[in-house]
Amino acid sequence: MTVPRLIDSFGRKHEYLRISVTDRCNLRCVYCMPEEGMEFEPSDKILTYDEIADVVRVVAEMGISKIRLTGGEPLVRKELEKLVGMISHIPGIEDIALTTNGIFLGPRAAKLKEAGLTRVNISLDSLRPDRFKMITRGGNVQKVLDSIDTCLKVGLTPIKLNVLLMKGVNDDEIADFISLTKDRDIHVRFIEYMPIGHSDEQWKSLYLPLSTVKEVCTQQEWDYESVDNVKGNGPAQNYRLKGAVGSFGLIHPVSEHFCQSCNRLRLTADGYIKPCLAWTEQFQVRKVIGDDEALRQMFLEAIGTKPEHHEMYKFLQGGQETTHTPTHRRMSQIGG
Ligand code: SAM
Ligand code: SF4
Image 1 (cartoon, protein in one colour):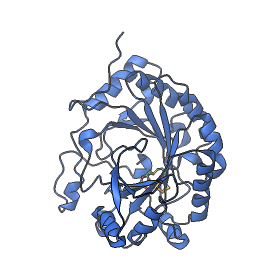
Image 2 (cartoon, rainbow, N blue to C red):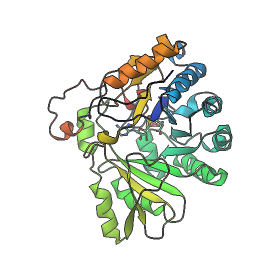
Image 3 (tube, helix red, strand yellow):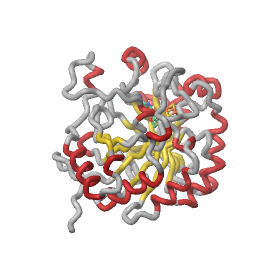
């Protein structure tokens, strides 16, 4: 039997599945979750590791080779190493990455690597203790910095640092973040703040286009060149300071979307396939797990609804009407 491939109506081949393993988190970042009152799914609504592995087995036959585990905070889910091990044995899976806030990562880095984790993205929006605490509503930046050191020691590299830039909040740290790449295998990726799942007013006042990063390099009189040899680059435009070990990249989903090369699908912790981050369409897999043919059909149906592109740029132009309904989910309920 020929297994159908995950190719959408715009010819985009899908090789990448982002799996959210929990909607819970130990932090409450200001751009991601409210300080209080967040409601979480009861544990019986969350996919089990066996269910997740079953989905991965089926989509691997359809062409998915790269998995990212995310959340909420994936490391608050017990024994994540076990899931990494289960997925790493599935034929066709070549790459298993983790997106984490890094607080719990250090002590678990070696075990995760041993289980088959290929690399990590650590979200870190400030290097300054007070500011980090303010952005994450309580986090300790030293724990994240220690985790980065441990990952370098155990060879969980290259390390990508996701830095969400916010106007007037952390844009004065751009040079400090780029400086981290000078002598370490660290790849900083500046990310634009997306208008997903929270108040429009907050987003409008904090959104910053990433052209700012190049302006900072010019002010610093830094020489930099384009590079595209960082493993798992995805949509980032990447640069390297002359002579640096690491690199820095720009991910600008709002000001310049990269949907034409989108190769990703998402699976939420409560079991929905989301073909597009921005829109509301979602498909519940739980009812078809165990029936491989029905599961394949559901993925094909989901991919059939994938739009050509999202329309976050419309928010920049004063919130014109969009062609699809924006998702009601928060980032922590999607996985970023
Ligand atoms: N807890 C993990 C972490 O923080 O890395 C994984 C989940 S988090 C939802 C995944 C990524 O989404 C993080 O890098 C975070 O900075 C990013 N994110 C959350 N809300 C965002 C927003 N409104 N715009 C852009 N990125 C966002
Ligand atoms: Fe938690 Fe990650 Fe969201 Fe921050 S960005 S609240 S760490 S899920």
